[in-house]
Structures are given as C-alpha cells and as structure tokens.
Amino acid sequence: MLDIKPNYDPKRMIGKILIALQEVEEDLEIWKELIIFGIWSPTYYFEFMDGFEIINISFDLDNSIKFIDSVKSQGGKVTAISIVHFVVNNAYTKKKLDQLLIENTDLKVWFWTVNDYTTYLRCKNSLPINKLNGFITDNPFKFKEFINKSLALKLIPKESCLQKLYSFTTGWFYLGLLNLHHKGYRITRAVQFLQSLGIM
Image 1 (tube, helix red, strand yellow):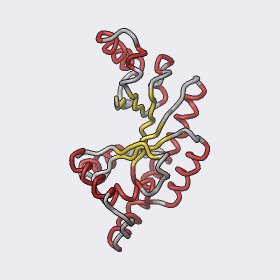
Image 2 (cartoon, rainbow, N blue to C red):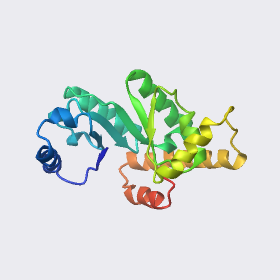
Image 3 (cartoon, rainbow, N blue to C red):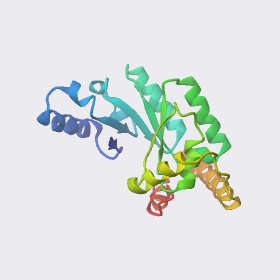
Image 4 (spheres, helix red, strand yellow):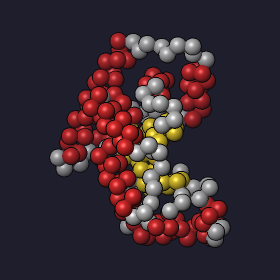
C-alpha cells in the first residue's frame, strides 16, 4: 500500500508516482493487481487510478464520508477505509462506522495502528468478518502471534476491568480530539505524540 499523505502538491506527487511505475512497467493494468493507493485527501485522487484499489486513510469518519462521496462523484470507487482503532471504543463513533458500512455495502475496513492483543481482539470482534479487511501494525511478527493465539480460542475472552477502563477512556479522548478537529484546532502534534507512544 502506498500511504499518500496530504503534505505536497497533489499533481506533482501523483505524477512522480505514475512516472516511477511506468519506468518499470508501462502497462498500468499490471500495476492494478500490485498497488493499493492509501489516500488521506480526495485532492490526491485522479482518473488514472480507476481500477486500482483505493483506500481512504483517516482519523475521522466524517472525512472518510466526504472522501467516498468525492471519489464517487468523479466516477471512482473507494474499496476500503483505514481508520484509527479508537473508533470502536466510543459508542457514538462505532454507530457512525456501522451506518457507513450499511450505506456502502461493498466497503471494507482496516484498523490502525493495532499493536496489542486486546486492541486486536476488540477490533476483530467489533465487525462482521466480511467487513474486516485487515490491520495496520508496527510489529508484523508479534501481530502474527496475536492471530495464532486468537485462532486457538474457543470462546472470546472477557476484558478485564482495567482493559474496559482503558477502552472507555480512550474512546472519550478520541471523541474529544475529533471535536477539537471539527472546531478548526490543529491536532496533528497530539496525534503524532500518541503515535510515538505506540498508542495510535
């Protein structure tokens, strides 16, 4: 997956990616089987991407909804969203995610960044298996252990009081960050700090 962050001029950045791909293989049809475009902003979507797998990466479901509508209006299709895992920790944002999936029946979900077993189980069990497309993690080898461990389970383990408290607290913290974001505050540094701690 190419994680295309909205930091540079869209035409220049996507143009350079297109040139780099065609220097190796001119036929874009071949690349459509190999490349996933992970895009944060709809300004980075271009017509040549039609046929590629398009994933919207977002911190905010409202941005994902706008992204999907924008790409649809240009004749494209978003195959999945990659959303921060805190979305399942808050009843309001989880309900919004469920509604988005009802309205877009072909849409799949990736969760980021999932680095611990409890978060993996919570995300895995929050959606029907046909809606869950994958997880983004900082440690793929450890994550493989999570998968093997969960496959060996006969029953879904109950979360401890501490785990429930963590889920509740992070869910409301996430909602607070979203409210600041919607009011126009820049939350980039807060998100980067949480990412540096491995929480997000």
